[in-house]
Length: 87
Image (cartoon, rainbow, N blue to C red; front, side):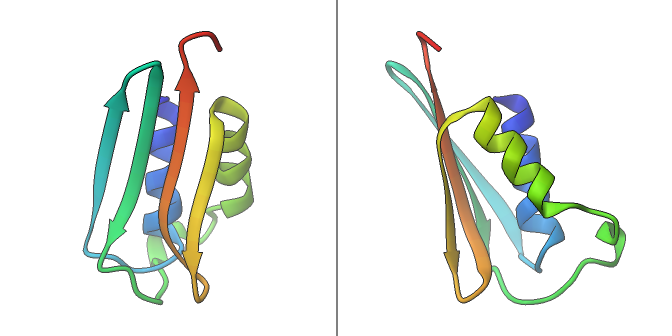
């Protein structure tokens, strides 16, 4: 889950501009995570020129269950994913 949170933060920070990131976690029959950009807007990050968005998406989908990427008008607003105790 730690790798998924890290990749989610990279996705939100490196593909656009935002004021910050909110990370939420719920623990019940497993762990449910939500990583959300605050004040997301179009833009680019000069420090992330070699960042590969597709690899981060694949890693999140492979390492978690039920990955969901909340996008609106080409901007990535939030990523949620979970992992059950039995997995």
